[in-house]
Length: 318
Image 1: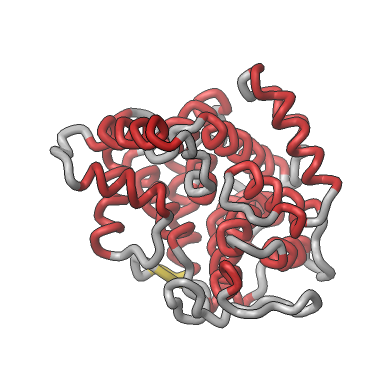
Image 2 (image 1 turned 90 degrees about the vertical axis):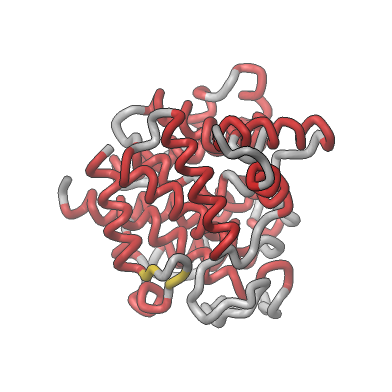
């Protein structure tokens, strides 16, 4: 791996975490943010969080990345380890948990836990059968490490991105979004540029390609605030992609787009974390301000350098 490639691999996790911490203070209007005001890592939010502290978006991603670094993500044993990691996080570190994720993991925690991944999928499917609404943004926000684990294998990447999404989010739209965003990250890391997301829709199931093509095109036509509320996985992806395509004023495209993502409003930390993963994959950790990297931290006692090492470990052992 070259130094530039290392920079982009590290940037995938670091820019997602910085976007998360930048959006935390403003989630669901926790703190006011004027239209011309630059967001800052002031903490607060729903945690409440310390300045620079990341939220569940990065916390859940770290679990996926740790499993990927330890043993890879290529089999059901790895999925069991991911679920067990999330259960440990839920019991001893979660500062903010989405309703859908809490419901699924709570059901697994209360069960036998003999086959955690299978039990998680069953709980997610049961929730979908009851409500018909399991396409939240909670699996998309944590999907970036999956891309780093399969940088040379797009077929396995799509399958594993869906498999890890399905652990908590049974709706196929959530799996589509994870597969699409992971493929964009994979290409960005390899080529050092943001790919055209519309060109990647052809890899999705035929029955939903037209819908996704329309959603991506709509995101390119409008500013991020158009896609609020963004708890739905489609609008979350649209808000993130719009922020990538419509950055705010800044010399760094990463910073400008993360500022735009926070200004989308509503689930600000999640939209910025999703956008950050792709931006960091394309532009590298070196595109992030030093003060952001110095401030970023969170469960389980990690800082920016720890995320950098974790990302490189995942990619090198893939």
